[in-house]
Length: 311
Ligand SMILES: *[C@@H]1O[C@H](CO)[C@@H](O)[C@H](O)[C@H]1NC(C)=O
Ligand SMILES: *[C@@H]1O[C@H](CO)[C@@H](O)[C@H](O)[C@H]1NC(C)=O
Image 1 (tube, helix red, strand yellow):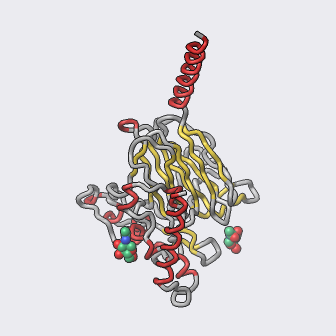
Image 2 (cartoon, rainbow, N blue to C red; image 1 turned 135 degrees about the vertical axis):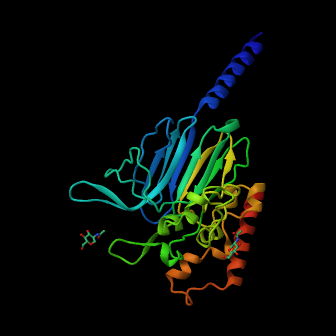
Image 3 (cartoon, rainbow, N blue to C red; image 1 turned 90 degrees about the vertical axis):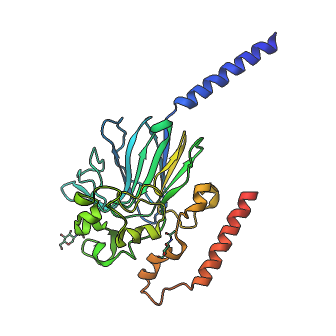
């Protein structure tokens, strides 16, 4: 008799826990692996449940976990080189939201900005997510889905520092300096409908990739590089939590990324483009890392990662 009772209590508790797990919100863990401070900004989509905070400070090496409302949709990005002037007005050199305060409070990122975009609990209960360079680029970003039950749940992002290699016409230099701090989209830089997928070019059939969008796509094959880059850039997962990392190392462990089918078809980082930032930073010819040494280094890292996976 007692045993039945204990079993009943156990089952009740277990069911309650499962129910709690069902209704629990999606967690976003936002991690700053950059050597500098990042000021994340968050914009909620129209008619979606709001989230607080909409902007905060994240020092190098720190992280912050947010509970996102069910069915939340919106975007998240990292502002850099922010400061407050003598009148108390807050602004950032890249991806500023123009609010004059730390909180973005309903304002989006002023391009160029690398954007992580989410629609939670969409069609068939799936979360849809991507990392977009359609509005340009300012920081390397990675989105990792953890504990997902359905969908591909692949990691996506742009792991390469594209500021160093940014084409001349797209560069944004630091205020009062020469250092490139962001890289514009061709649409923003030239306003040509061909690059913006607008006017006569407003359908997937009429708007294709350009030499500029290919610069982004080659370096970061999984990120959105122009408005209709859907096929290779949108990822889905159900009931997952997400880790959003600023400045992930290009060697981010295989264990974290998971060994998924989709991932095998589309590399997260184009190895031949990986050192684009460093090459330019060091002055072209002197900074080159011989390709063979690079390839061996990558193989060793991959081998170590695979070994760790077996443990
Ligand atoms: C850039 O220079 C101008 C004029 O010298 C100055 O007012 C401004 O504060 C400087 N901005 C930064 C970020 O140093
Ligand atoms: C990697 O970059 C090279 C040259 O920049 C390009 O030809 C190739 O298509 C890229 N690979 C991917 C998967 O985008």
